[in-house]
Length: 351
Image (cartoon, rainbow, N blue to C red; front, side):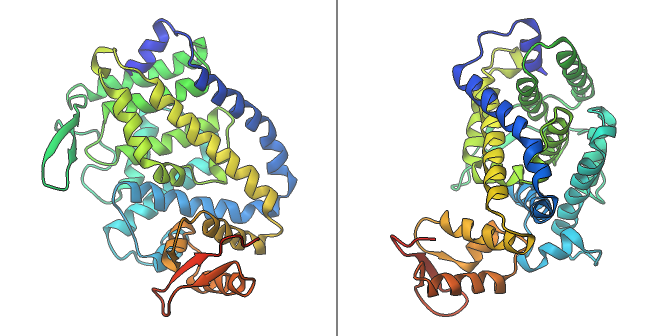
């Protein structure tokens, strides 16, 4: 809550880069209704795909992965879950569903935060409970060395810090200390610095981001997996988080690198949303477009598994069929044989 405290006392000049992001996001929000009403049927596949992307990516950032062949069963099915990782992915799905369907009834409160944590952590002893022991953020190096990257708020002070964070969020919106998206990013930074749970802080922070976006009228997270964009830029995510958390406890930190990262993520999501809505020809063609887009983003050789990772929930057979058609058109070529064969875009090939 040290960032929101900074903003409550005196907002210095907003960096030019931040102003540019805010202007772009204001324009994107203005177009949002046009896109969401243009063709509801086109958006059905995007919603389904975003749910998969969000649940899989947010957990994968934390090192929690499930088998590609099980993704649709875990996200949409009711079958027995195979292990702890599958339980956490489905729990995140349940939390997303709650936010997508009931955001207007979910205030930013301690009860909501604890509920989201309980959903994402599943059947574990401290689900829905603040940490009871101090725990700093430790960075581990490949050679076995470790360092304290950030000293979090102590367990004994966590409840008071969380209560103040929520009070500051509500006061900031009411008193208009800053543009609401700046307050949103500031809240996110403060939450991560407090680190209120033993585990699951990153996932809850991303769920709160989605909930607060809904409250502010930004609904892109319903159609684009914001968590997937964060995963794809996670080096920048961790870098800006470290830049902005230095000096946080004394209120001497620079929040703008992280604030700009959050705004960059939202802008990227809106750009993808507008692009995908414009590209989709029909619900049947939506997944095809996603596969082709994933292929176009590749640099150098790639495998079918790489494309499936970018398009969770899309079957291997469908990816193979698209690759076969593109090869027939001279747009890609296969570099080997078998399931692990590599593929490559043909230089100069046109879609």
